[in-house]
Length: 66
Image 1: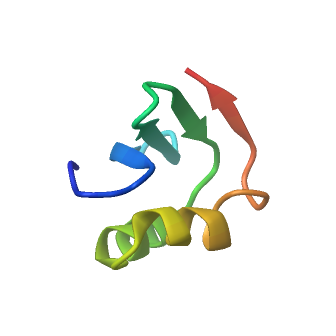
Image 2 (image 1 turned 120 degrees about the vertical axis):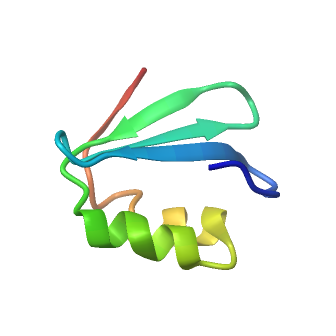
Image 3 (image 1 turned 180 degrees about the vertical axis):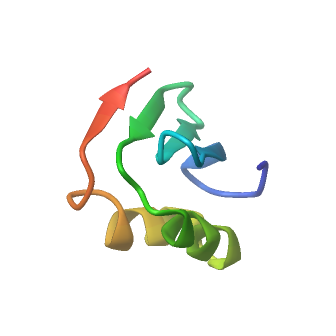
């Protein structure tokens, strides 16, 4: 999903693996692990994707660089 953001270029979700993939404007891509689908849905609806990521995902879900 593409959208205007000061930090996030796009993000996608794999429901089978429960992984949220976030591509930052820097080009770095991270996979956040074991993210429930409802959290992804909430992120889609959030006005500020970066703020949502910082408040609801970072520090709460393990991640790895892709």
